[in-house]
Image 1 (tube, helix red, strand yellow):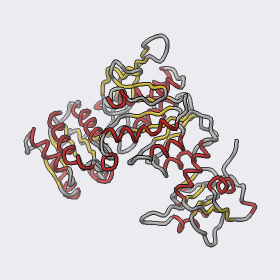
Image 2 (image 1 turned 135 degrees about the vertical axis):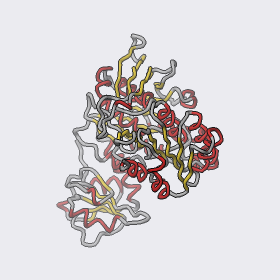
Image 3 (image 1 turned 90 degrees about the vertical axis):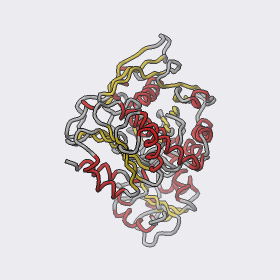
Image 4 (image 1 turned 180 degrees about the horizontal axis):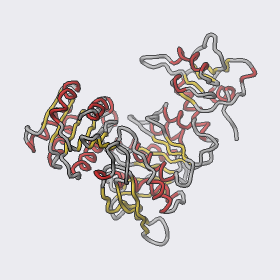
Amino acid sequence: MKHLTPQVIADITGGRYMGDDGSRNIRVRGAVRDNREVRPGNLFVCIKGARADGHAFAGSAFESGASCCLAERELPNAAGPYVIVDSTLDSIKTVGRYHRELFNIPVIGITGSVGKTTTKELTAAALGARFNVHKTAGNLNNELGVPLTLLSLDGRHEAAVIEMGISDFGEMGRLAQMVRPELFIITKIGYSHLDKLGSLSGVLRAKTEAFAHMGHNGTAILNGDDELLREHDPGIRKVMFGRGGHNDVRALDPVDGSRAAYSSAGEALTPGLCLSIAHRMTASGYLSFPVRIPAYGVHVAELAAAAAAAGLLLGLTGDEIAKGLLSYVPVDGRAAVTDTGMITLINDCYNANPNSVKAALASLSGLTMPKVAILGDMLELGEQSDELHYQIGVFAAQRSIGRLICCGEKAKYIYEGYASVAGAEPAWHYAKKAALIADLRGLIKKGDAVLVKASNGMKFADIAKALQTLV
């Protein structure tokens, strides 16, 4: 198997090698953009950002064991080899694409307006019953993060699950050129990044750019309960997942037992979600198998069906998929449930759009204890933003959310929508997060189930942290 070296990086990027001849062919293993994350053998990518210039940290990267740097200018007194290119961002994509082609393993791409990260984790868990799976770490799902993820592939890996996030036209095509997925999951077409994509049809067009970069043997795994995806022709094999009877892989009879599933220390005692996966992926007609997942929310059921579809397409048995899904661990900030000793905290504050907020509210409404939703602004919704926030408030009232606490400029429309149905008494709106946090002891009661959700830019993790300290 070929390996990356400084000379190979220079050759494939058209860059200029800088260093002694003895270092041209040393092995490069993985890549990072943060010098604090450098491990011996890494490629350090010097990115000039709005607040910091990575070139200034090249020396630190070499001290931590970087085998090479990718830079846009000369690095005075460099302690190791480096390659000068016109654009480090463009060049790392080239390197990522080259490195991915060195691996003949199943690669699953995942996108969608809601549930990308949860589906990535579920799919990796399901496949993990048979394969050594490489998966996207953290939020490395964009045009810089995806090549860094691909460059972390090594000879141990037998499959890869790559999350692919976009906000504009053209981005998915560029990501797919790097990832070249064999299977491509789209979770949902929803109201996200409308400031650039304009409408649901625009979101669909942007997400489905990937299919032009998949081989004829590739398979699109699409949410068949989403009308736009159900009607879309990807030009390759299409497998539909969801809860409706028309789907190839179905999530049946999900039961959320999350209230009994967590100890006071926040450790999962028993799986929170039970369901059956039924499928017609064989010539024997519909087959089914039971699944238990340590996850909160019935909306996770259809995402588990997507993960199961990927597993079935790669030859896993139902028993293997069920075993893998049982190992699923929620990512912090994405529907992570904790019993704090005072409340059941549902920390879902990593991100938010109208689809994901409605799903979270629907799951909250199914719990038996008093229900409180702390909601903030949903960003990047364009001209429809005010109305979409208002409708979230209406939805919360219709779902019998007993208390609603809103924070943020746009969140006032959530408050107004709720008040239009339920009245103003069980609802509050705060312009500033600090004021809300100061009032939490008076707003939250022992035994409440409290959902915290907003776009990541609102930094509602501060609220979740404060809730954990209430006694």
